[in-house]
Image (tube, rainbow, N blue to C red; front, side):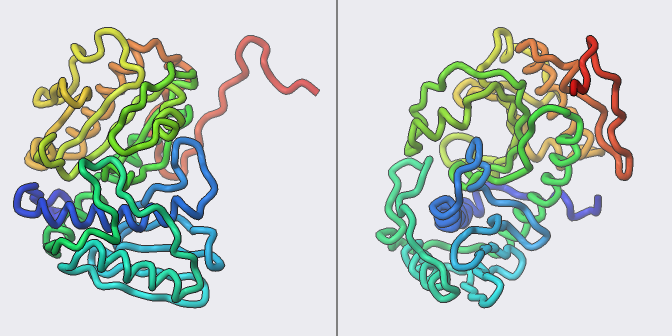
Length: 322
């Protein structure tokens, strides 16, 4: 990867711009959520990393609408096959952005009707009532996007080393994290819920099956004020938080309940991709081994271009039965 693939991304200098971008992503995400049929574990509502920024999937509204947060040219593009409308990403209030976004959706034939209260944030304020001025640091946003592209490529490579059910690499706008999740294939105990400003039925559907999930945050005020990678298991198997996870700078965060690896540890290493893959693989190993996952059926070598997976003979006489 090129020298700019792992940019400096200190959280404090762009904390308020990050908060604004998070809320803009929530406006876009909640519009998509309101108009898209439910897919397991909320996969239908996530955003996806592109070379330009973050995009929704095709929203079944207004003849098919897609919304792109272009984090290089710093505009939001709302378009369908017949029309397009753009909104500048700049210093403004969330209420002003919300109004302009709704106007853009309507201008291309969409229906700008969706819940206006942010999710998974403390003391949320409705989008249309949030009139505080928000800064927009375009340079920091562009560096964050460059990091998202790089991390997404590593996550995609890690994703290929698994034959079981696994999510796309996607960004959850509620918690504002890029994530990839593997599933054991077994049902999980009922999730207790209680995630702030997230309906329990959503959390319980998301964690209906056993998972090992890894991701990347830009930072979170009060919780983890630095960019970092995380990994956790649900349900957490006995001994998990005492497991050795690589590299040595990784640690278990008791409050968050997950393993953490600071982004700067990866960025400053001689081989950032290898260090991140070490973290992803070793934290998965801990969850899968301690959770007694069927690794012989789920694991496989990392994928390579143009090389299909070998087909193993059926086990125990299993096969086609006419």
